[in-house]
Image (cartoon, rainbow, N blue to C red; front, side):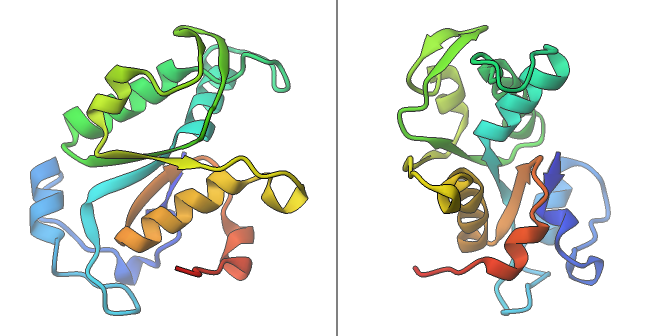
Length: 170
């Protein structure tokens, strides 16, 4: 899974004296700034639930792409639990509104399971839009949420194409 750290040049990535979660968050906040002068918020991470759950279904559960039940919230659950409880990060989830999942470990569902929601600071619902330009609305929402918070994001997509076409109209 790729993160914003893969996109940020190493000269902009802060160094911590220890690899413990508290040292990474506390020691780095306020020291490093992006090219716009904004301090990085290393205490939060935006997670693209759609791609994390689909990758888990495909790679771990060996489900076939294009199959109705590719996505599984168990992958999201493991990811969020590790980030929030083990690393102490605030998690912002990104998922489609009215996202319907079938046949996963949680069965049929129209919403994010309560245990996952409880581990998150917030969950941003991406509107479902039609057309070729909107197929990756959840990817765009992930990037914009991380940009506005100036924090890291976690996803498995290749965001190179977004670098040249991204706008922030907020």
